[in-house]
Image 1: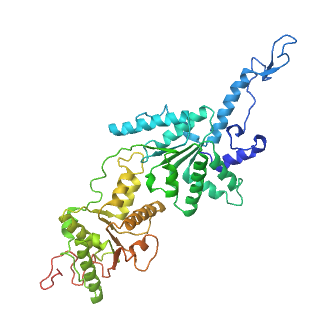
Image 2 (image 1 turned 135 degrees about the vertical axis):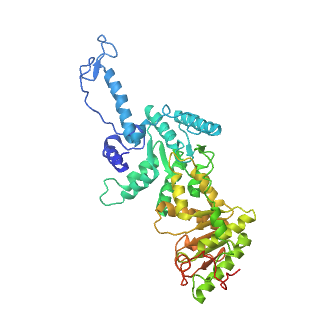
Image 3 (image 1 turned 60 degrees about the vertical axis):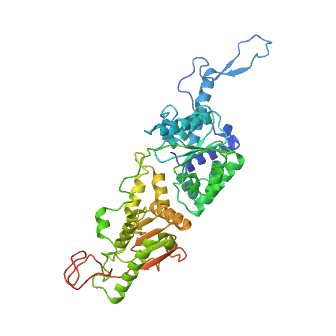
Length: 472
């Protein structure tokens, strides 16, 4: 797509000849000389009516047929340039499958219903239309199809991907910007029809939220035709924006299906071998020949983990942190094994793998719906997040972790976290939730790495020598 600033700079340069940009008739006209003279008017572009002297129309000139054709072509070209659709001009109702890509009958029915609603809206754009659904479900295609349909019929439409819009608004603050911020912002606010694609994929900064709130509020108050696509649940979007999108007097919400199948079988589960090996009884509180203080820290961690496994609702959150190899994962798995033995559900996730999995569900060809997996993780009765660390996390991954942590903290849903970070002396929006003493307990585990050789030459997991039993 063409850069938004370039489009609006070109429109601004034509403003003086067209008296503004807020109406369809104000979109600047670009004319070109015909390549060959018209056979009818010989290139003059107008004809004098052949009527006798004294006729009321004697001497009156009318545009030639070639001008009428050129006017339609020029107007269509102007509208396309204004629309910012770019390569999305190929996304029409004709190129869309009327029943979508879902293999399930219910999915086909949902898409067919959304398709018909989109076609109806395109014929008479009033109010707002919101498309929700996982990536690859066809939201953008239907939104672009509406835009292309309207353009073919002479209606101006402005299409923009939300992260691109915010980037362009930020760049307008720069001293070298060729277009003012107010011009950019007003153009988006007052577009005769606006398509906001990909709401929820932008960086969730306070500035971005404020700009989006202003746009949504202004267009809602003016009841300007607006189309929004999002892969998020509408209730999870900023409440100020969500309230406009869910207003039944203004907006209609259409849910599009993805290829919804159950998540991978091993997602959230623990290999049986780990459940057998990593129990409370096999946890060695000696800490690979650790000091007295180190053994005490492991004893406290073991006692807390045992207590937590018997009553997660009473404990709330339990955070175990320390250097690698001190037994954090061992105790987390032991908690899971104890809960599973009594028939309670648990969701165990190695955080780096979990982030990779969630990211993969955004692919158009993903067989798993992102929203379903994300909701499962946020609301599972007991979530164990193993190896929570901010190292090497992308902004997207950190934001997803933040959403999970905040939701579970606010809802007081039992959660176990293991982390190599110093969770007691560090700060940050995620860490601060683990430090909340009203909702959980945080424990430092300090001991030598279990995985390195002991002084007696044995390794963790080797048979115990006589007289060196483990703590029960």
